[in-house]
Length: 228
Picture 1 (tube, one colour):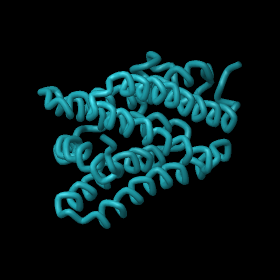
Picture 2 (spheres, one colour; picture 1 turned 180 degrees about the vertical axis):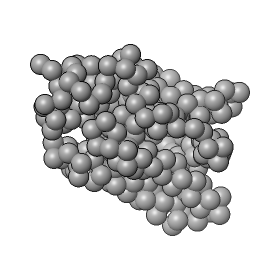
Picture 3 (cartoon, helix red, strand yellow; picture 1 turned 45 degrees about the vertical axis):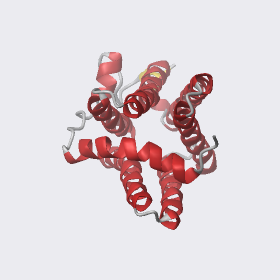
Picture 4 (tube, rainbow, N blue to C red; picture 1 turned 90 degrees about the horizontal axis):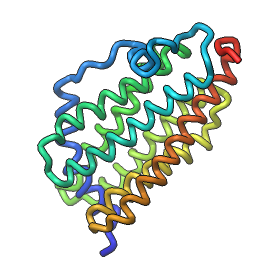
C-alpha cells in the first residue's frame, strides 16, 4: 500500500520524536570540543599541520555514525525495542560531535550553530506530530516545508562558511539524505526488507560522498593546515 506524506510523517515521527525530545529535555551533555577528533584519530586532528586523509577518515566516521545510529533508531523505534532511548541519546550526541568537528576551523560559535541547526530538525518534527494529532493536514504540510527549510538553513550556513561548498549542491545532497531515510522508514513499514536494505546502502554511499565533499572543501580553504 502506498503511504502518503501525511501517513509517513505521522508513523515515523510519532515513534521517533517522543524519545528524541526526551533526550533533549534531559540535556544530554555535548562532547567536549575536539572530542570527536581525539576519539577517531588519537588526537591527531587539530589546527596544526595534519594529513588531509586523517581529516577525511574522521569526517567519514562522523557521518557514518550519523546514518548508522539513525538506522538503528528507525529499527529500534518501529519495533518498540528497549534500547530506543539509549540509541536516541547516542544519535543526539552525534549531532554535537559534528558541530564540534568544525570548531578547529571555524570557531566555537560556528560549531554550536551547526549543532543547533541539526537539533532544530527534531524540534520541527515535534511540531509536525502535534499538527498530525490534531488532524490538521495544512499544518503538517507547512511543517514538512519547514523541515526541508531546515536543510536549506544548514546549506546556507555551510556555504557561507566555505566558498567551496556551493549552496545548491549542499541543498540537493541534504534533500537526498532525507529521501533515503524516508525510504528506509516506508520500506520497513511495508516489511519490504530488500527495499529497506537498498535504501540504506544507497544512503550510506551518499553520506560518504557528502562527508568527502566537506573534507575537500576544508582542505581547499585551509591548505596551509594540511601536510601533503
